[in-house]
Image (cartoon, rainbow, N blue to C red; front, side, top):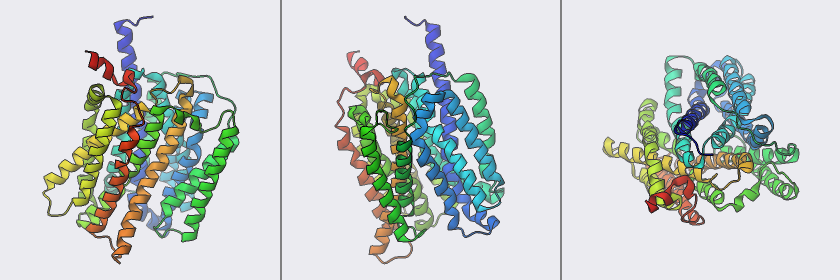
Amino acid sequence: MVETDEETKARVRRTRITALIVACALFMQNLDSTVIATALPTMARDFGSDPVRMNVALTSYLLSLAVFIPASGWVADRFGAKPVFRAAIVIFTLGSILCGRADTLGFLVIARILQGVGGAMMVPVGRLLLIRTALKSELVAAMAWLSMPALIGPVVGPPLGGFIVTYFSWRLVFDINVPVGVIGVLLVTYFVDDVREAARAKLDGWGLLLSGLTMAGIMVGMETAGRGMVETWVTWVMLGGGVTAAFGYVAHARSHPAPLLDFTLMRIPTFLVSVLAGTLFRVGVGAVPFLLPLMLQVGFGKSAAESGLITFVSAAGAIMMKPAAMFALRRFGFRDTLLVNTVISALLLMLCAAFRPAWPAFAIYLSLLLGGFFRSLQFTAYNSVAYADVPRERMSAATSLYSTIQQISLTFGVSIGAAMLALSMRITNETIPHLNDFSVAFVAVALISLMAAPATLLMARNAAEEMSGHQAEKQA
């Protein structure tokens, strides 16, 4: 049945509205993940707690995400993507309200865990909702919106948190989520369609337990490695436990008819490349929100506010990318775009290693602007091509696996960036990082991102042409 012009316009409009609503929810989640870090010292004074111990407010949230993200696809199939996404916003907002009312560290941790449950459902289920709404030819444009929260949130969060804490109260850090959450629930209710698929088999309980232990062990181990937050043996126990649970999960999944995380999806070349190359790329890029503000403040002597204004330039680059994504993919296709763009992005990331106070401000701003632009293009391409060849009935399983691996890779990025910085300091017997130490760290994470380039060649040159429009452009 051929669509009329009015039906086509209505469907495109509905896809754009859904993309914007999901993007706003994901921005709220990404912003909250980073804005709290700036507020922790002030919160510690109010609670009468050690600032170092306050880090548990961050790790408890990450743990909650880690445990519940793998179940998101099954929950969406069982109860419907729209109701689950709406409920996730409600849970996240309730968690925010409780965080803002906390008067002890224990209360805050419980509230952050509740927030994490909402965030774990919000990210993958929001993406699933959009995938089920959009046609493949519309998915790249839609995913361009979803790549922005991941890039802008970590950049905007620290300076916004510093501004709120300095001029208002740390409780406002959480309270700003409330109006956004209320508006989000209303928008989802009235403007998002509930596109359902047949429910999968009953929940894989053992898979949930083993995947949760894997994610918790690896993420806590990586978060605490080399930071002096816990005894070294605790870090090794968590990493060892996570790896052991991972092997246990793989053995379990091979014999289970409907595993929670379905690794047979890796047999699809486009999904494999998006996961493999995307993980390497994200590990490198994930270190930027940690390394860049620290270098500007410690190495350049900038204030937190000045650092925030400089790093915000990369967010502007991400926003500028959206109109260019479809043009690049239509002109060059997914494989060639990802291949060339990986090299450009890695070189721009490596350029940060050369930043010095004597540099003209314009040169630093331009480098960060271009870096944000090309990184955003890369994320848009990865997030789109991952689902190009996944059968519709396996979309929920694909979003669960993809989101789980994304979460781990971004955590690895911060941890590896911190480890490279600490290693350079140890070699030079320094107690405070100098500019050369930051240079070593930036070069190391840039090389990891560069490793994504050869992994891209595992995908056919004409892959996902229906999605990119590359073949149509070539024929025209």
